[in-house]
Image (cartoon, rainbow, N blue to C red; front, top):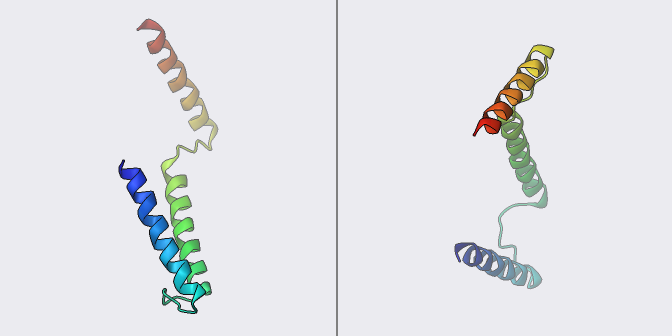
Length: 80
């Protein structure tokens, strides 16, 4: 229910925004370039956090450790 209300609120805001733009009013005090730069910065930050969060095993030792860990988890699952 909360997701539906959120989607409805966002739709309402977008409809009001589009109506104001159609009548020649600029409801947002930002230029298109500033919006582009802001969105780019947010996407950059999100990708940076996502890459930091993921386990990126680059070295051979780390890859071998990942294989051992996976095998260990598989053995535990088999004995349950």
